[in-house]
Image (cartoon, rainbow, N blue to C red; front, side):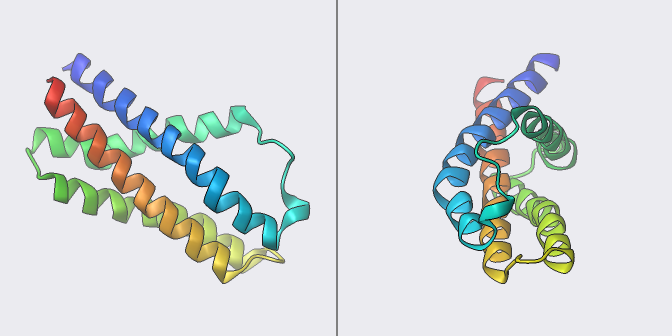
Length: 135
């Protein structure tokens, strides 16, 4: 079972990281640059970013992917459950920021919330599919 979890974590983490690099580069960064350019660093701090990715992937496995494997849930169930978890996670950040930060916009909320929801759902679904294929 340990090998299964390693495949699940590794594939989910790698897919999440690769897709988010694309999304951050071409969707999120341009949107945030339009509204809060003075708050953005020239280059991101990689340590905190990697901590987020590592922790978020563990949460995704705990709440969605492992129950899907042990309960033999469909990939549609994985996608929907992960989308819900992604909306909670990204929504918490975005709506809190909108509530307390100057310059935060509904466009930023909609863009990041949609991206985080789809990113989480896609990564979890692909991770479970890959794990099932190799286990």
